[in-house]
Amino acid sequence: MPVWKTYLYTSLLRAFQIRLRRYSPTHITPPSANTVRTDSYIVETAAGATPVHIYYPEKAGGTALPVFVNLHGGGFFMGSYADDEGWGRHVAELTPCVVVNIDYHLAPRSRFPFSIFEVRDVLAWLHVHEDWLGLNMERFALGGHSAGGNIAAATLLLLRDTGAPMPAAQILDSPILDLATDPREKPVFPGAIPIFVADLFTASYLETSQSAAHPYISPLRAESLAGLPPTLVFTPEHDSLAQEAFRYAGRLKREGVPAEYRMFPNTIHAFTHVGRKSTAKKAWELVVSTLQARLL
Image 1 (tube, rainbow, N blue to C red):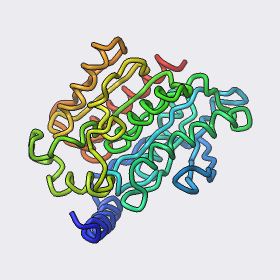
Image 2: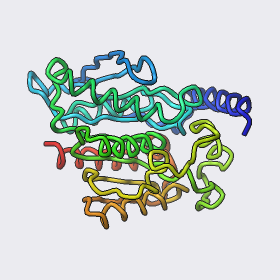
Image 3: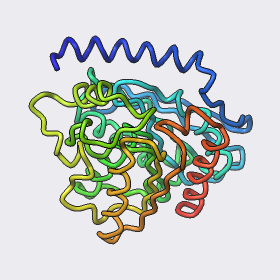
Image 4: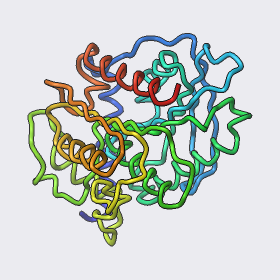
């Protein structure tokens, strides 16, 4: 796809997504978390100045709590931290833990590999400043939704390969794990991600010279997944990404990594953010119970 088309289409879809989020009656409003405090920072990373929003539950008091680092979805070129702000505060209150919500730079202005370097640099900043921030980074988890799940899984491979501190858990919601497979070869369902949009994921995120089979782009294709932390992967039933998520969890198990795959029946992509609140709530409660089991 020509570069000018990539910029044009991603800009139009981003504008449409913003309006849809603002006016859609199906957009889920999470339970209020009035006892959660939000602190915001700007962290210098490989991608530039990265906004980082940190949610502290009232239960923290003066105690350093474990940390969940969250990456929003949006196909690499859409979305923002605001998509997950309400649920992030809810997770912080229920677990209880500190939730770090990274507002990473979007493609196509920020392409691979800057996103994973950006997350790596934020994690390093959290480790360096954990006492000042009131965090316990000896017990942290990393996770993300859709494209954010891809970035999380890829960042973990980078951390493992470079000997950096690893999290105690990984939590992936409907992650994109195989950009090397043509979207036309993936399962198709009513309500699934349109092929045209899936093509834009790759076109916006990668330079034309980059191979989508690189493990930091398609984590499912990594030569080895050994050494990764215990992982929860969950997906909707009707999602073109569900099959690769299932295969990823299976590979983790075969390579000695504790892993759980959970499928939510009668749901479509982004069900944690749009659709039935009762089903979304169950998924977020699964995130909370996993964090409690792995971090507390």
